[in-house]
Image (cartoon, rainbow, N blue to C red; front, side):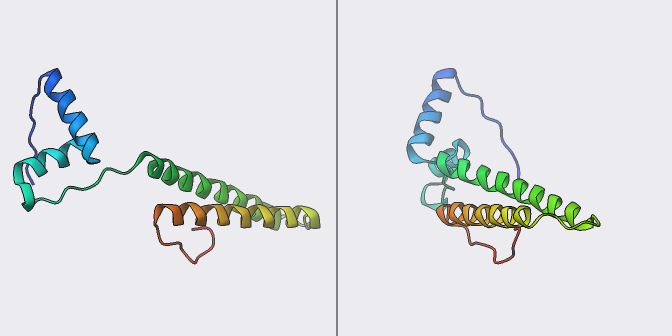
Length: 117
């Protein structure tokens, strides 16, 4: 698909930005919808809160990975970890998974049934 570059004055660019924002779409989607009318269905720009929730899902995944690395290291040692440590790590992992599921539900994303996903 060919790409096009269009130059706008500062005022035109500001207007394009305002109108696209008002319709909740990207600038490119707004221009396409104006050019092609009903033949084009614009893609909605993600709401800011959805962007933040998606970022949080990624951060939760990183934390969950760190918890799994800690568990792997402990399992490779000859002495078993203290029982209270295992309990605390299990509770932390379950809390992270519950938060992840809540965020994914808020985003309308299907929740994976696999642990650690």
